[in-house]
Every structure is written in structure tokens, then in C-alpha cells.
Length: 116
Image (cartoon, rainbow, N blue to C red):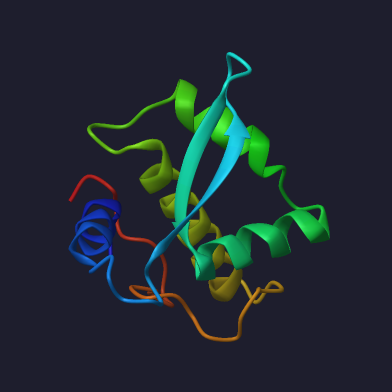
């Protein structure tokens, strides 16, 4: 699944499903103002796991995504994509993962070109 297919998948999810219902957390943006980040709990679990391991500083991800927007994706969608991509790569290369289950759209043989 390429990044466009994944974002279409995210946008198609029903927010009324308890598993996909967004949870909001506040993170400082590049101006020091609170930005609301809306992610499903399963993605917050991954972000928390990555931070607990010291692998990422999610606050830096927030600022980076804010400063490097992509098409019409909002900040939460970009962060969700980054978490998904990180989890896919960890599964692909046999690195530690937050869950033994590969994420939706995971391809074990490498990433498709993002220009498809």
C-alpha cells in the first residue's frame, strides 16, 4: 500500500467505531501553541511505546510535520502515516515492534514507489 492508498484508507474509516474513534492530545507546535492531535488509541499506544523506548520524540514529529505539510493532509493524518510507516519498517526488518501484528496495508517485501 503506498502513501496515497493508506491515506484513502484512513479517511474511509468510520469515526463512530470505538476502535477507530480519535483521542485528542495537545502538543506544542513550532510557535509554542498547543496543537490538537487526533489519533485512534491504537496509534497513541504506538507513539507512547516509541517514546518510552527513547526511539522518537513525538513532539519533534509534530513540529516537523507542521513545518513540512503534504498536499491536503492535516497534521494528525501525517503523524498517523509516520507511525504506520515506522511500524511497517520495524516489521519488515525484524526490529522490535509495539505489537506482533503487522499494520493494515503492510507489505513484507518492501515499499512500493511513492510515485505510483
